[in-house]
Image (cartoon, rainbow, N blue to C red; front, side):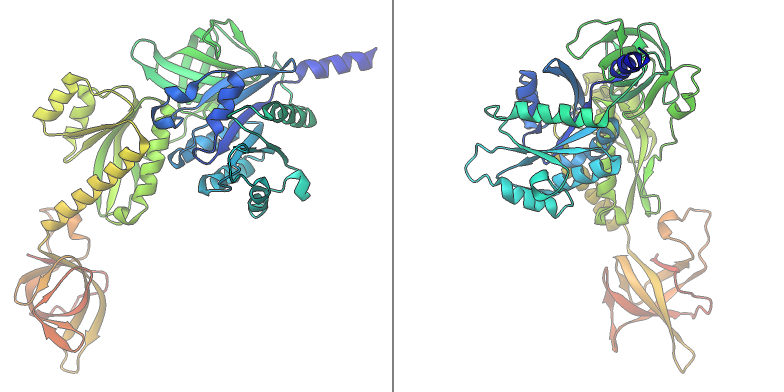
Length: 498
């Protein structure tokens, strides 16, 4: 009798698997989910690229499966990483005719870091040139061994176009789920993962989440990321109003006054888990050690997209552009660009406003025009990143063109006569014989009117190797002789032409 009761309790606490689909762009992630859901999300997406994380629940053989649809573009690495953390199983989609690509490798690293089982879906087997065996070989080189290669990962060869073997993919998901005995307590402490959040002009903060444990109900008082909420409305993935959501259920809720972050945990207000839901400090400057900082107000349609764009801009700053310039985010938020966004950018000299997949109302546009604030909006991540690079490089060129000459001391050479040749690398503009020059112990970019130079004199002569020259341009190393001598010159100091 007691064994039957234990069995019933165990079965009762089993929950549906939460599955995230990852892979390289255009390898068919959305197409597979599209076929499974019998919907046509792909045609509604701009440029055919999934721009948001959504969650959907389906039934297969009378058992539920919850899918998280993570975006495929490389810019959304951070969203994929969070999707991996929220999921129980990762379906890795690889095109049979293209094989393992850079984003496939990124997806693998996220799945391995999340320590979740991987099911490989080799898609597009209907296409000419498909080679599933080559795909398996390439996966093996990434430490993903499928079953017929002696590994533990189940692989299924599918076609999202005609639906071939999609049912076998779903069977594999249920099999892996049963093997791992995923459990949750509907009556236990609430734990839900935010997979999307945005600011709606009419509804306010709209948060999509998946319940991992416990039950989320209409009227519950909850907290997430330091923000409190009384649930005012709940809808399921089909848009139907519901009163409660149990484990593995995706749900959209209203009631937050602020927009919490994607990946944050939702718990009951006053719960012992509440400290896990406190928002962490966010670094608002990317490239802090750079010489110059460009102020940015960043707006996007959803919180998930916002974080993805910030991640992409961080990658841009870490490139050669970022060697000189840092980005300071004055404000990052969701929703259309407002007049206050423009004024905030205007308050920082040279501040700009970048918007992704949102509107620029005429009122805000007029304020931007009258205050000469650069405001740019974009519909694809490609355009935003390319343009941001141009803006940074253009700003760098414009600022650099105003510098007459700047260099940094890299070495000192003492001559038998007692003179010192100051080995210098020219970083901007040019150094010329006979011009006035000052020396500072910090980057002249950071010098204010209150700073007094350590030395002011004249460039007596310039030397390149054994040859004396009149002018030395940018990125060239040279020897500088000063008049009068400056005995305290040291490596690391800066020369600035006056």
